[in-house]
Image 1 (tube, rainbow, N blue to C red):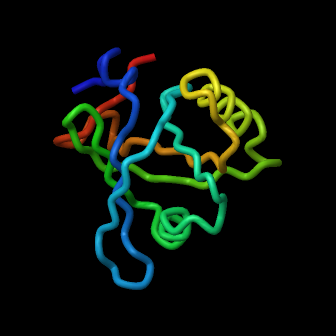
Image 2: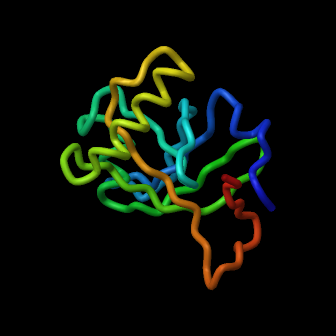
Length: 125
């Protein structure tokens, strides 16, 4: 299954991380943007954000968008090493929401051998 234009125009997605202390699922509703086949979310409080701390401990996440859920890997971007993606994610968020000053976190859908796993989506560029 592929992302539709409508799902990418949605205002938010649900991101589920694994609690770094409890091991329990932790779900948030959050704004997102898309670029170059990846999804990006921004953490307002940068590395002090609890869900960012969870991702740093365990990058495996679940994303729900437009009623569909899929497995993904999240990665906190580095301002120097990932400067292009960092700046693009923030600018896309400014364009979509009027705010884009947070810490960008990249979300990549898991694909194995070129095939989507059941319940996973691929972004159409």
